[in-house]
Each structure stands twice: as C-alpha cells, then as structure tokens.
Image 1 (tube, rainbow, N blue to C red):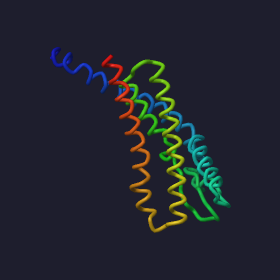
Image 2: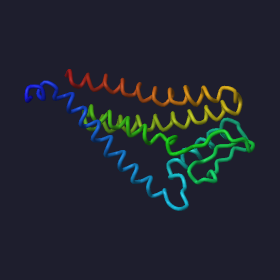
Image 3: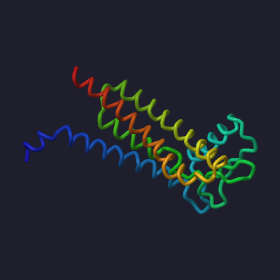
Image 4: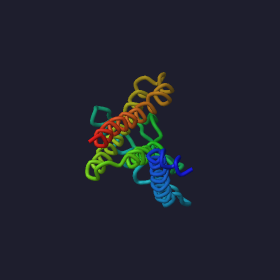
Length: 182
C-alpha cells in the first residue's frame, strides 16, 4: 500500500489539492450567496455587476435603449433592448463558479508563488471578461438572429467559457512543466 502511495504521490497530491480547494472555495462562495437568499431575494452583487457591465458593453457597441433590471422574481437580472427581453442573467452566469474551477486546477499545479498568483489573477480576469463578451454576443445574437438562440445558448455559450478555461489550463501546464524540468 505504501508503495502505491509513493508511486502515485503526485497524482494523489493533485487530486487532494484540486478537490480540497474546489470544496473550500465553493463552500465560501455558497456561504456568500446565502446572504442574498432571503424573504425578498435579490441577485448577488457579482451577478448584478456582470449584468450591468454586459448592458454597458452593448451600449458602447451602438445598441440604444439597453435596460438592465432585476427580474420580478428577484432571482435574476433581465437584459433588454427596446423592451425586448434578451437574456436572464442568473448567478450561474456570473463566471464565479468557473473561476473557482480554474483556480482549483491551477493551485493543484502550484508553481513559483509569484507566477502562480499572477497567473491566477490574469486568468480570472480573462475568464470574467470572456464571460461578459459571451453574454453580449448571446444577447446581440438573440436580438439580431433569434432563430439561432437555442444554438447560441446551448453550444456557443458553454464552448466559449469552458474553451477559454481549457486553453488557460493548457498554457499553465506547459509553464508548470517547464519549471519542473529545470
């Protein structure tokens, strides 16, 4: 048994750090979300920020009469143009869960402290920005080409964010493996 543990020490280290950090950060985030789950629920501040920034970006690319308002249920934000509902932005759309997944993977391959922390910060900013872009692209797509809304939400939406995370992971593994060879 001890030989197996020694043989697979690095794999076990990766698994425990990944699962442990994912569980820790997810628990902290869920604790944060509980603060907004009350008798009069409101979307958490991060979801509200993502919705407003998506609306601001739509305005900056030329769309007029963009509105971002809380949905009457209080559980999401509505992104609308000319009173036309384009997207309901819920907690799952704010990219925090994806950033937690990204962070857990990077921590499991922790390298040099400064470089790892810088990569975590830069990667999180990239994921956040890509997330806002994907919301805007989806909203514009629904506004301009409503017949493709199913494809955009089911295929493009997940592919954009998970593809970004996967590419960032690949880049990190290449950087990390270079450090380990030195």
